[in-house]
Length: 119
Image (cartoon, rainbow, N blue to C red; front, side, top):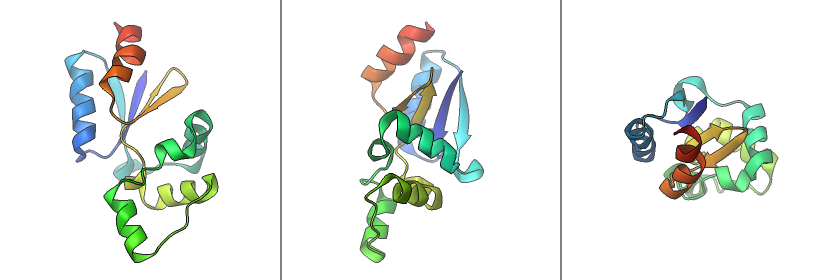
C-alpha cells in the first residue's frame, strides 16, 4: 500500500492526490496536522534519502523562522527536531512505496516508480 504524508490544505498535496485518483491508484493518507510525525519515521526517511531532501528550506514556515529566530539546522538531529515542531517544513508530499520514499511532486518520477508498478 502506498502512503502519502502531508497537510490537506497544501496545493501540491491536492495536485498529488488528484494524480493518484486520475490514475486509479489507492493510497493511505497521513495528515501531519492531525497525526503529527514521529522522530522514528523522520529518521527512517532520512536514512532512505537524507534529511536534506525532506527538510524544505524553501517553505514559508522555514523562512518565517529564519527571519524571527535564526535557527541553526545543520545536521539530522536538529532537522528532525525542527520538523517535529514545525511539520509544515517537511517537503510535500512524502510518499512511501515499497520501502522507498518519494519527496515532492514530480509526475515523471510518479510515472516511473508508481504508475508502472501499480498498473
